[in-house]
Length: 193
Image 1 (cartoon, rainbow, N blue to C red):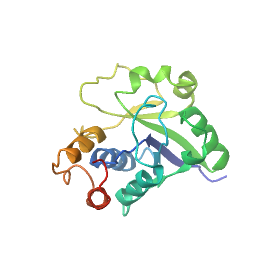
Image 2: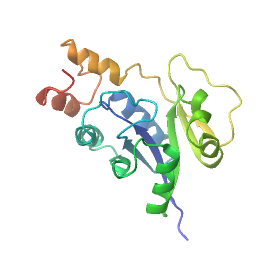
Image 3: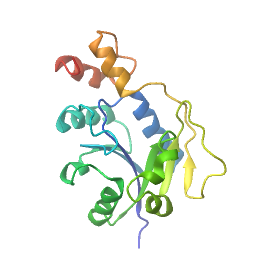
Image 4: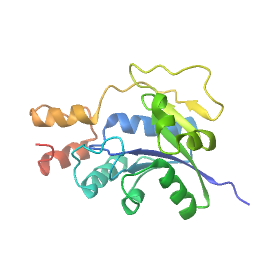
C-alpha cells in the first residue's frame, strides 16, 4: 500500500488572507512535515461568531489568488458544505471520509495552543493528530511539548487580518502586507470600506 499523502490543514476565515498566512504555509511545506498544505477557508469560526465576514466566495477567491504558483499549497472550500459553525473535529472526520488516501495534520498559531483543549473534542484532536504550531508574538509555549506537537521554525510575522481591514478603512497602504493579487482585489472591489 502506498504511503498516504501528508496533508496539513491550516483553517481560518482569511478575512483577508495575508503574507503572514503565506509565510506559515510555505514554512510548513519547506519543513518537510507535510506534502501539501490546504488553506481551509472557514465560513464561520465558532470562536468568532460575531465577526463581520466578506462572503465565503470572495474570501476563497482571494486565498486562491494568494497561493497561485506556490508549490504544495492549495486554497480549499471544503468546509463550505459542512454544518456551521466549523468545528475542526467535524471537518477532520469529513476530510478523512472523503480522502482516505491522505493523513491529516493541523496547523495553528501559538496563541491557540493554551485554549486548544477547550475546542470541541480538543482532547481527542490533541491525542490523535500531528499538530504543527507556528510562533506568535507574546505567546510562549510550555516545554516539553507532547510528541505529536511540532513547533515550526519560522519567523514571526507581525500582521493580522484585523490590521489590514483597519488600514483599508483608513485609506492606508496594504501592499506590503498582502499578496499583490489580493491587494488588487480589495481595491478593485472596494472591500472592507
